[in-house]
Image 1 (cartoon, rainbow, N blue to C red):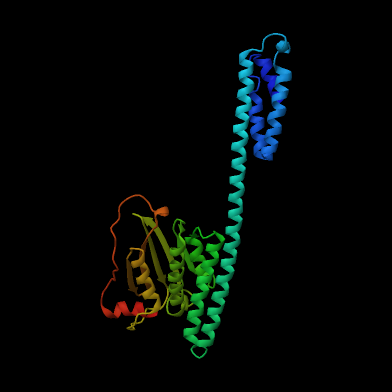
Image 2: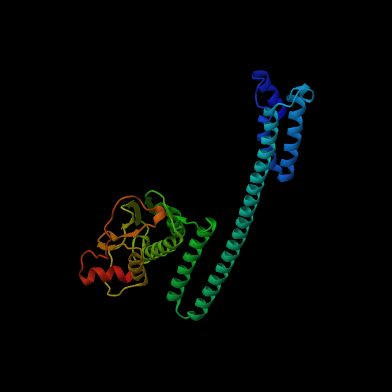
Length: 315
């Protein structure tokens, strides 16, 4: 092919460089077939160029200096091209081997994590066999962690889709009762796990006491990103009015701790139509947006103990 190209160049410009097409031929051969193929392509291309495109009377007349320089340049360039191509192939091969090893280790780690979670579930069942409510809650939380772990494994622990995290938690329920609105973002692993647990607790609370405890309730889950913060709003409609019980539950403690960890804030509202929860979390550098933000603190709307505790108890 390089020789055909050289013939074509000769028809257009007889003074074209003798070895011009053979540089690319050597590079392609070295990239595809390795150093040996590159050497073979360079040698055969050089011999072909000398035999076909250098004037036939070169052995009679003094060999022109520019032709000698062309041959030497082609030889030196071919050595550099073959070395660079072979180094690139070696680097690419190492990267592929490391990627294959990483995927193998990732699968092995996922297998081990599943085994650990299965053992934990077995221990919980055995330990809390006479405490059904506590047992079921703990097992459900472990299952939520396992589902999020599967999402992260599928992405090679590069992060998880926020919308996928939410949908996984809503799988056991009627999807038509959930309304999700917000631009999908990729959450880092540590934030993905926390969000999965938070939404799991909110969903469980809604199934027991809120909008999912009847046949007509619904949940609106919206989120947005602004000023380097992820802002999430959970709003329940059509459920029973929340009761007033004085006690903080696991879900409330988890939410309060999580927003502190990610420099955010949380607001609880007890509405006649159902629970409202708003919270924010600071996005990591790879997903942050430009602009300044004011680091928030935990806030509770309507600070009367009855309102706050009634929300906190059920979570």
